Amino acid sequence: MPRLQAFAPLASADAHTLILGSMPGEASLAANQYYAHPRNLFWPFIAEILDIPAALPYAERTRRLCAQGFALWDVLGACRRAGSLDTGIEQASIELNDFASFLAKHSRIGRIFFNGTVAERMFRKRALQTLPAHGEMRMFRLPSTSPANASIPYPSKLAAWKALRP
Image (cartoon, rainbow, N blue to C red; front, side, top):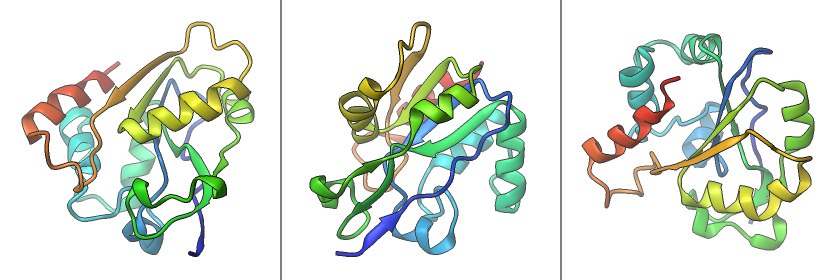
């Protein structure tokens, strides 16, 4: 299996909210863009919730997301994985992103939203223990926006994602 490298975080210095996925899928890695799969609901939800049109060029969408105080990253910095699904991640190959440094640099972040169960589970199990006391940090799991998560109806997912609003 190939060793996959995740993206750098997208964040402004005054970010207040961090959205974490697990690891970019094949379409995202190929496009070098977060949530690039055409059926992933992340950008349509952001359009609906934060009024950032999904049709804008990627650089403009991410600029506007950061300008509204949102940071975007993944729990894993690198891993080996067959395909795009989280179930294909080779557990022994997991390398976490450096959350201690990131959160020290972005000290205004008070909320973390997880894009799916796997992102939350990996963060809580592996990353949380590497952080100094997280005091007032609030953490929320949202339903995955992945096209593989088809069991939850669109309106229910969107309703859950509306928790992003400050």
